[in-house]
Length: 133
Image (tube, rainbow, N blue to C red; front, top):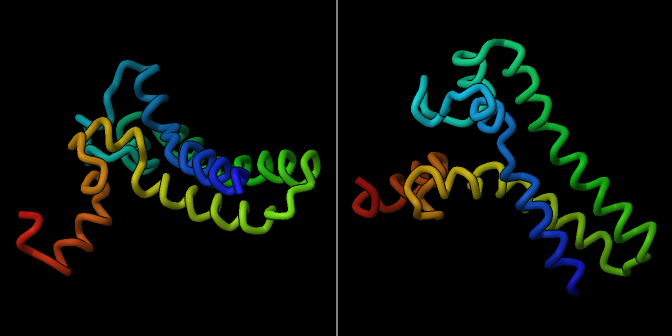
């Protein structure tokens, strides 16, 4: 059962990595203050150039793939865990959740983790408009 928790946490942390954000920091540009103020590949492409957009988009795809490969190596090949299918399922959902509600984004924007995602905030506005302005 601990494998499921480890897989979920590892998946969330891998999903929350924002390559364009860190690339911008290396160049001395804060993507949260430039362009659309989002940490995605398209904003990075507008601000930092098309090569960063391609690298950021590719990294978004491969960070999930790499996370699942690491978990496969760890829990299926090395440990032979009976919970391996559940670990992969929970990790896949956690990678998606980490990409949408990123730990980096939560710390940067509102410092309130639930409402830091524009997707979740838009959904909450539809359900309960009085909650969010």
